[in-house]
Length: 484
Ligand code: AMP
Ligand code: ZN
Image (cartoon, rainbow, N blue to C red; front, top):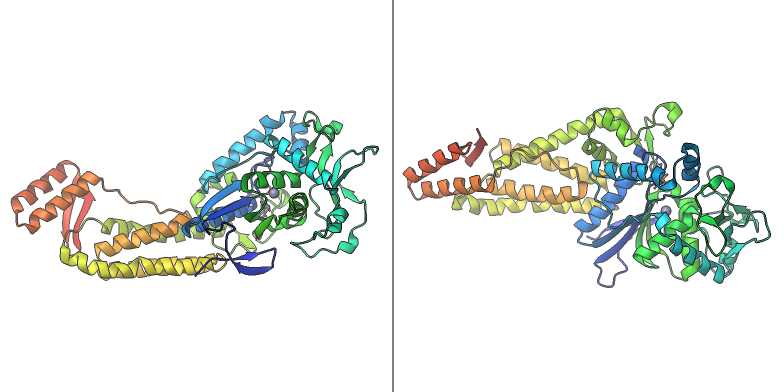
């Protein structure tokens, strides 16, 4: 079965077919952090969702180019730079470094490219110039505010559609009504021309760049259009973000990009639902505002937090609770215990008869769990169904281990299957004691000596193993290695 994803653009679940004619490469852009503070657990839900999409595409053998921008210049940042009396780079550098540390703590794969807005000012200016040349952007030179705005009216006049992601009431659009701010929070339906280039004002301090439109800085929306198209081309496969970004951020990205190129901008738009904490919107005054660091300081691990963030379907609002984190610990312990036992059990077996049986049984333990996992994930990343597959597998493995009906090769096949599944989930499993290759080789040699009835040599190898700190036990399931 092929991968299906809910595309906000078509408001339906669609087959995922990349633009690459060979069907192999997939370009994916995730709106990244605004580095004015530590990212909170809600932000992390969205970033971990991006990581899941990338990992699952790779599981399906797509060659993914994953791009995540760093928004290092916008209104909130400038305000904080002013308040803290620091330089822009000094201020954003601290939160950017924290972001990458947190990304690692949650075992998210590093995006292939993480462009900073401040390092793409020439690309941004070139894109605005294109829009000016096509008559879709304007500047009121004689006005007090000399910012450059995107004209929704002109864009629509060229046959383009504004409001592709959300159904907007365009009757509310009044010509020449403009907003300088990047975020429309109060009235989601409020449509107005938005700033592409914000003219320098005294409050901006040192944060400005020269441009053909005068000194100033880019608007937030144009940053993402310029950086995504530079990295992935005028049309690319996937664009992700939290649901709050649909409007105006993503709607405006589409308008700017399609207005400038005349090409479709993105094939699949994916939006993750928000996270609530203890049933409420996070806020500092409610005391339910957690950064990742707050939770690590409470003694939870990045692995437990990642697990919890991955338990709910990405399109469902998720209620994050401390109790849930405790539950995550228990669930992970079940996986760890099972995987630990399988690892211990997967020690070398050189009995040809047992290997024969194992080959057959192995086919039952490795492949089906992978197929079931993949069928669940293909269905618009149905992670709850995927976890159900994992825990059914854990139960089944535990039962078979207890009944002695599992062969060592089955355990090895099962582990290979688990590792492939975990390449998507990224929760790992604490490894038991790893057996060094040299010790494994000695154990194999001892089994071979026993089969050849060379008991003297078998005993000598046992002594050698002991000297190296390992004891070998013969069990009905085959030899087992233990560290002394
Ligand atoms: P920001 O750093 O504010 O630009 O946000 C980074 C990402 O976090 C964006 O994709 C937002 O949509 C997302 N986001 C913000 N708040 C939440 C939340 N409570 N739950 C899930 N995602 C969120
Ligand atoms: Zn963006």
